[in-house]
Each structure stands twice: as structure tokens, then as C-alpha cells.
Image (cartoon, rainbow, N blue to C red):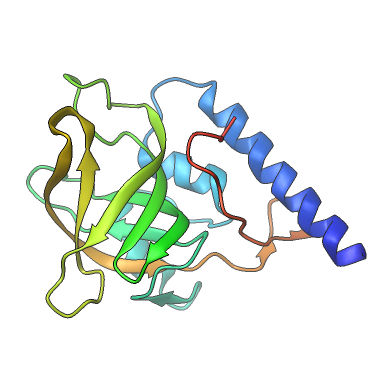
Length: 173
């Protein structure tokens, strides 16, 4: 019973922080990911992978609550991070993220939930993904990634046991 109450409390804290986060305009992906997952990393998103070495578990398999780290590219010089909210299958996840898209489509600084991401890597290791892009009603270009950083079970921000729960797309707030 106590564990269930703590899990429920953790879910409420995460949900409330996501709602509070949505109220602020102009989010960057790293700032938002840090707000909704108990990962204490700073700086450009692409640096998170190396920063996580020895501090957090990392891997190539999606897991609810994990942070998917995109490599930097010419079109994403700071890289990108997104939090896994649902594992749909071995090669598809739904993520929650901020600042994905362009100014033209209203994506800059906005938060979105339930965005589809598919693994298109040759080795099925999530090192190359495509993200659903609503303006063209299709998946966008392929983006290189490092993999997933797994959130710890203990949240140092709140001092409570943290257990990632599936976020229903569109319900963050």
C-alpha cells in the first residue's frame, strides 16, 4: 500500500511539473526533458549522452521515461532530447518533447506529447530515427541518435521513489 501511495504521489508530482512547464512559453528541449524526467544533466542536448556516462544507465532499447538523445547535425547544431512516454513496439515509441519543428509550423519552443518516433537504423538499435511531422502528414528526415538515457528510480529533486508511468498523448496538463 505504501509503495502504491508513493508511486501515485510521484506520478502526481510529474504530472504537475509537466502542467507547470507547459504554462511557460519558449521551452528548449533539454530544459523541458529535465523538468519531466529525473535526470540532472545540463548544456546542449547532444552533450547529454557523454555526460550520462557513469552517472546514468544508457542503452539502445526504448523504455518508458527514458530520454532519447539526438546527435547534433547541420540542421540541429545543439542536438535534441525527447522523453519516451509509450513504447508502441520494438521500433516505435511515442515521445513528449519541446522545441521540435520550425517557426513556420509553430514548433519552436512549444511542447508536444504523443509524437511518433520510429527506428529506421539498419541494426535495429535506435541510432537512426524519423519523427512524425504533421505539416506534411508523414515522418520527417532521418536523424542520428546516440540512444536512450534511463532515468533512475530515485528522484533527487523530490526525494521520493520515481517510477515512470505511461503518459497518455495530449494529457500532460
